[in-house]
Structure formats: structure tokens, C-alpha cells
Image (cartoon, rainbow, N blue to C red; front, side, top):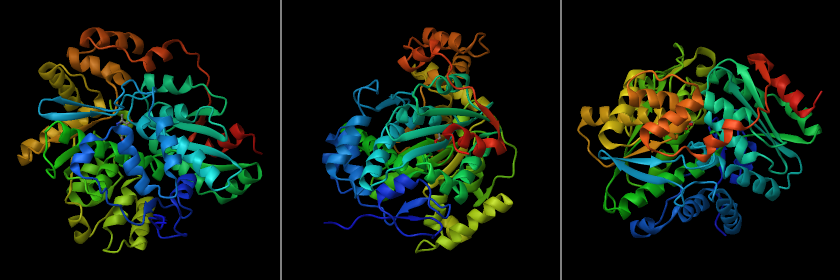
Length: 500
Ligand SMILES: *Cc1c(COP(=O)(O)O)cnc(C)c1O
């Protein structure tokens, strides 16, 4: 028997746990994020990799991280997750347009990349509960900037032994995103609009997780909390898979030969998706630059430029709402990695305390020097719109607003560096999820009509089919109408669970 790969907190507290226990807990007891004690080597030859389909790639990667799951358990999770819920047999597609490769991660049930992880997380979690003899129901608490919420609701709906409560910023998500959530079916689902922005919702959820008194009360009522946010290691690991898969596809297509690097450009919010690419690189996938693309909320662009993380700045609501974030939670895992040769959890914890208390921290020069693999860039609203229009006109290919941020920043990167390494652009949402902005960008001006009219207009203009996921919510009845204030989230949870 190989020794299990264990997970420890970025802040140094608590004991190291197996993968299944880390997945159940979501967040470490000291408020830190779970990180693997080491990053395993992929150990697959390029020839093999170029022949693996998505599910086999998933198995090859996940078994290295989730070592306390049996092969059979993992295959059950993988087969249950990546099935006909996806509208392409390949699960993800790689499309070449204008010298770049768009990795379409939006073929799942909710037409955004969150499905890649959230269709498998409930299975990993219920398997983990069984393995660890947990008899309580798992209550999933999630803050969403739009796409996580729906993907989590859809993944957990009617999964026995689970409840799910999703908080979203009441005026901070697209109309299609909101409608997707408030029409969610499933007896175990609840959706709450918060009067505040995404960071307020996320901070509220974090505070509930850190509330020991509430935790104890919950336990008495037969519940434990867990998180489906991208801070859960059970979200991060399935996301590593598609970068490994993308490299295999580039190999198969002859776009790179064995060992030649690819760059990746990732539209970034909470830093989960790009961190997964970084982990893929550490596993041995030849990835060169990791291009971290932001919208007007360019806190990460500034961070990679200066080494200072400063969230004290105006918050912008943009056409790429899933990236409207000033506190990128998963960055903590990278900070942990670069603070000291041997990972110094006290240094990471100190930065996170500064972030909480002053809203900013600055890396030392030595720490900054370890960020050389990353390139931070950002795209304004105008640039995003131009990029959608340009990609459509030049290549007849329609991309959504988030993907456009990454696409635009990639082009800026190439013009400023001359680096023409084959590049994979993470395409994180179907254009139909943000039809209004996309139609406007393609038509070059405002197009009147409600959301669903714009969906039809996008279909007409682009000659592409409206995805089933959008058709479904046109007529579905609204089932969730609860709203609360920022400081009312704890009470909402108690009300929903029927706890005094
Ligand atoms: C969540 C999301 C992102 C940001 O991903 P992170 O992992 O939070 O950085 C980008 N695009 C879309 C469409 C998303 O839903």
C-alpha cells in the first residue's frame, strides 16, 4: 500500500487529513485552505496522453490526488459525472480560431465551466461521507458570482444525504444566471439573494463556516456544513484534468510535439481555474506562461505587476460578472506555496490576516520572484466587446464575455512579448449565458429586447443553436424568492434548516 497523499491547511493549523476528509470539510478549521502535502508527478508518456479520452484522463489525474478513494469509487464518480448531461461526447472541445486554441469547458448542464467540477463534487462528497462513517446530512453552503450557484444546485439537487443553500448578490448576476437559479428544482435546494456584492456573500459564508457555536448547534440537529466553493479541494482537482487533457489534444493534433510547451490564458475571478493549470504544470505538463486575465476588477493584474494585493479600490459591475471579485480566495494556495522554501504557514496566515484587517499586503522581493510563470493582464469593457466582435468577424466563432477577457489579454501578451507558443484559452461560458452583451458586440450596438429575445437574436445572427439549458428555463416556474441583508445570512441558514 502506498502512503496516502494528505492535505494540510495553508495556515498551519490542525492535522493533515486524507483527501476524502478534506473534501467533506471544505475549509480547514483555522480558516485556511487545504493543500496537498506534495504535487504528484503525472507519470504518463506523451504518446499515452495523446490517446486518453476525457474520462481516462480524469481517472489518471484524480487517482494521484485522491489516494484514499478506491479505483472503483473513482470510476463510479467519473462515469456518473461525465455522461449525457454534457452535450458533446468528448465532454470538452478544443477549437482552433486565429492561432489560438479555445478550450470549450461549457458543454455541461449549466453551460459554464463550473460544471466540470460540480458535476463530480457531489459524488466525491457522498462517497467521502460513506468512507468516513458520517451519518449527518451534509449541508452545502455556497456563495456564487453567478455560475457556481447554478452548477452546484444542479449537481446536488435531490442527492440523498445533502442539502444545498446558495447565496448570490441580488443585483450582481445576469438575468439568465438569476433565472437559472431561482427556477432550480429539488427538495433539498434553497436559493437566497443577498443585498450586497459577491465579496459580501462570500465573506458571509466564510463567517458562517468559522462560527463554532452554530456548527455545534447544527451537529445536534444532524447536519454538518461543507462547501462547494472553489476553495474545496474536490473542486480544484477535477479542474486540473482539462489542462492535462488539452495538452493531450494538442499532441494528438500535432500542434506541439512531446515536451514542447503550451501557454494557457485563463479568465480569472476566484483564481481556482488558473491555479488548477498551475498544478497541472507542477505535475509535469509542459506549460509555459500562465496568463491571468482580469476584467475592470484588475486586482490580480496589479498584484502580478507589483507584488502588492490591495482590495481597497472601487468595485465594478461588468459584462463578465463571474469575474467581478476583489478577493480571489484561491490565491491563498499560491501565496502559501511561495512564502518560504519550505512553505511557511505562519507567513501565509500573516498575509491573510493583513488582507482581512487592512485589505492589503505586499510580498517580499524574493516571494515575488517566484511568480515568474504568471503574466497578469486585464481587459476593459470596450476591449471585451471589441474582442467578441473581432473573433466573430475574423473567424466566424462566437465567444462569451469571460472568454473574451482571456482572448483579449492573450493578444496583448503576444504583442508585448512576441511569445508565439501555442496557447490554450479557457472558454468558460457559452455565449448564450451572456447573450445580451454578445449580440451587442457582434451587431456593434444596442439591441432591444428582453433576455430571451436576445437569446433568439444571437441564434439568428450567429447561426448557432440555442442550448437546451437555456430553452429549459424559459418556461420553468420560479421556486425561490428569499432575499436577505448582508448580516442576515446566518439567520437565513437557520430558517431554511429549521434550526432555532
Ligand atoms: C467562475 C467563472 C470564472 C472565474 O473562474 P475562477 O476559478 O473563479 O477564477 C470565469 N468565467 C466564468 C464563466 C465563470 O463562471
